[in-house]
Image 1 (cartoon, rainbow, N blue to C red):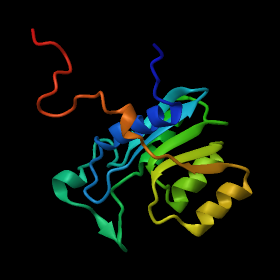
Image 2: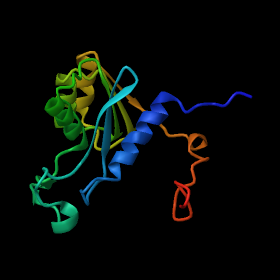
Image 3: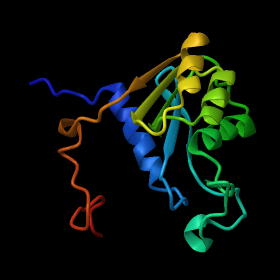
Image 4: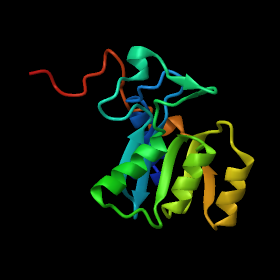
Length: 163
């Protein structure tokens, strides 16, 4: 009997979705997973600078329609790599929402060659153009429920046996 394993794009995108659950942003929960050679090298979610207050606790700090307190998930993942000295050249990113223009530029400058995203979100035309212009690619991933059907999540789920 052959058991079908979850494809890599489904697996890594699921990791980004899981990361988004840690978001402290009340406007949009975003998660990002950076992958190189089929190995996760970093993850991030949108939230405040470490040590600052969080939007979930004190509301967003909005200036010109943008929360300036929040660091985007993609930036947090890239900054984790920078902080730990992990190379991102030729890596891929899996992100729950299409990256904003600033995150797209940072991802491309860091050497990310493939941007996988789950949901369209204000896809900036210049970001789309830049991705193509530098020889990178963007690919929308659609999570398939058949790979997650056997998970028993929720209040009734027993992740670990009771002791």
